Length: 535
Image (tube, rainbow, N blue to C red; front, side, top):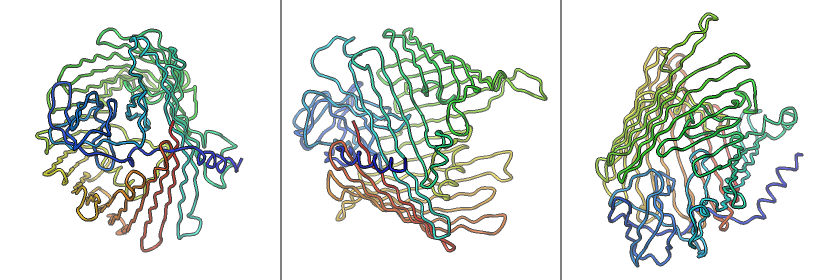
């Protein structure tokens, strides 16, 4: 069995690659917007085709925003995809491939639930609505990753392998049946006995479900799946059904929850409930309201009974509102069951685009802490994330020119369990395409004050195309200074990071990331290698 990782890597190396973010690209600018279309001006559009996807760069990521549905010699007309609102003057990126496939248009979107690329293919030949709705679409990726942690202290090193499969098969064989899956298998070297004792110590099934579309308004899911309309309850192992009535959707859910310790199947944790959603769309934006009720069991006893409400609204121009509330309806007090109405979770977010250069936002987060089943953040950044997740937060982002952007976040959190409120401040400035070196640079700082420490993190990042369309790289440096209040100790770290991404061919990509952490007592090094095959 120990040869399995090597065999899988060899198989993957024999497959062929693609790294969308490293393809050759054209840069354009939003010149005009109507109620339905966005016009983007380029120096020329010879390399673009109808059906191509256009992107906007946010931080270090490329986010799909437009789908080309018409073009001229120097401009294209696109329809919006995703939730990002564009404005005149925004910089738009178009990636161009070495070969075009005229028979099919390719639409790249992003599955936020699992952070995988989804490729939907449509044939331009005239077809009926039912035929289009039942066209087979299969997309996904497989990957093999290696994590190596090296420490100057004895016994502080380990090596971890991870293999993953994510796939979305829609209308299999042009039928009413679809399937999707997202599975990971991870293990540490030298610890195979733990895998043999319990396969779920290594195997994590985040999604494995089959869908049946009875008709255009009725669908049924069977298996493990997170329903985005009631994502607060997490994954459900069981049956989910939804019926649409005009602007309304009614859903019913029954099944069990994954085990808290290893994410395996645990039928002692049953749950059932339902939701009602109402959604409307206008020329300006959309609005969705969802209310749901659920009861969760431990064996035959009620563990929790609660209601959940979610609202999203973009009906007002340049304004986006999101709100969610969770209310417990049951509690067990001194072995006595009682009905209650306790607000146990709340999240509010408001974002306003003042001008094309300036945007403001604020949020109030009273949600419960996130539990990670797998994370590779360093200690310093884990502390920063934990202390800034909840509370009230204000953000401002300003882009004075197309090359320069800057912003700041300020947050405050108050808890009864903490003797002192937590405060945090984050600020950054970015410069795109620095003359002479053709690189992007970002300088940022984070300041943290909590009941147990005062800390600062300063970070500089440089990135650029090394070989256009093939090789992309970046380097980071971070200085960490944490001063603990109760024992007068400190954590001072110098963290260096280098990463490189290689587009081997259209379907295969490889990336490597090295992080070195240096402090007075000992040093740490982490190496991450990742090979991805898309299909």
